[in-house]
Image (cartoon, rainbow, N blue to C red; front, side):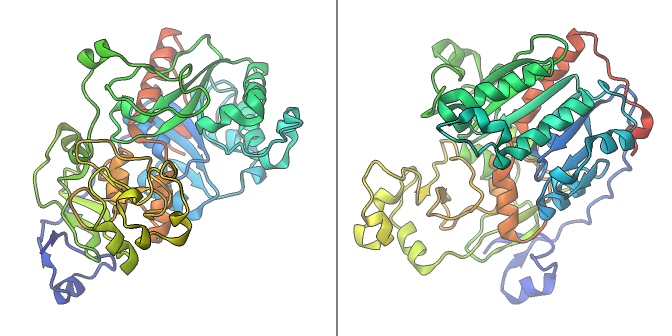
Amino acid sequence: MVQLGIFDQLGNEESLKRSGTQLRLLPSPKKRAPTKPISQATLATLDLFCGAGGITEGFRQAGYRCLYGNDHMPEAVETFRHNHPDAWAESQDIQQVDPAEVRKKLHLAKGALDVLVGGPPCQGFSINAPERFLKDPRNRLFTDYVRFVEEFEPKTFLFENVPGLMSLGDGKVFNQIMSEFQRLGYSVAHKILFAAHYGVPQERWRLILLGSRLGPIEVPEPTHFATGRANFRGGRTLTFQLGEQDKQDLPPAVTVAEAISDLPRLAMGEGAEVVGYTSDPNSAYTAAIRNPEGLTFNHFAARLSKQNVERMKYVKPGGSWRDIPHALLPKGMQLARRSDHTKRYGRLRNDGLAGTVMTKCDPHWGTVFLPDQERSLTVREAARFQSFPDTYKFHGPRVSQYEQVGNAVPVLMAKAIADQIRAHLEAHGAIPAVPPEALHG
């Protein structure tokens, strides 16, 4: 019988009692102290395509202040606004947003913004005419990002995307993107970063472009030792290749057990939107990520279909669909080659990394079964794998919460980038002078 926090997902303590779930009542959380005024020296960001705010949270932890966030998903903006209440956040079609009006409302002069961050989708291109990439209506979101760069002339920018961008149009699309930023006067560094290299307990790769008007800029070096399969274009030339010396010099990657095994154990159908801890931190990672008020959020274990419950019984830690008897596999997968769909119906290993956190917690999509519990990941466990702190609360229906977490840039990777940009700005004497009216909005 699991011990949980104060309220179930409906905020109803009595319904938990009726269901037979034992409550571990905790003291009422202390009220948060009012936000302290931010000095003029605070580094300022704008976050386009902000989602739930993974990048902004990483930058916040590095001492930045987000002035403005925009995303098309209302639930994600609700989450962003709740966790970053000092930012002006809106859910609006970015095409309808006038960057000049945003800059005017923030009282920012051109060139005053420290960092523009964002990851616009870049999907549309013609393999026969990739030079038309920038004119393709499917890539209007990239051109909207460029509109903000042109209007704000930020000192630096962070552009993130999937590694597959490198192979679009045989690399010509990526070259056009680089040319566009260089046309605007930026020195640009690019690298494909592995999240586990920055203390994130997850196999996740992201293409990172850092631009600066001040001079050459570098991406952050790994802080943890980890290895991963880089099976994409640029996997050998654009990733950090760590060796034996790095293994001796760097701390090891954070494992699944170190990331989530302190959270309350659940059976399917158990859990709550607000829960209390039932054990002490089990690692440096959990000690740092836990909420000192004793509560966390979004820890509810969904029920699986009868077919998936039966399939799950056969999957061992580190295993996948290959462990499932052929007759129990979905019809489509019965025709799959043994080399295909390597992560589907997977079970995590306590001593390994989590697979890439998906936007759906569906066994058919990837590795979502717990190592030692007969269920799939909760939103909170997925958020732990993305290095969101336990104070971070996700809003909207649970399906949307999973999507918000899966779409996010891992917080600790964003923080490493933020630290690198701060060092770059300081090295060039670019001490920010953001007007107080912008910071207090």
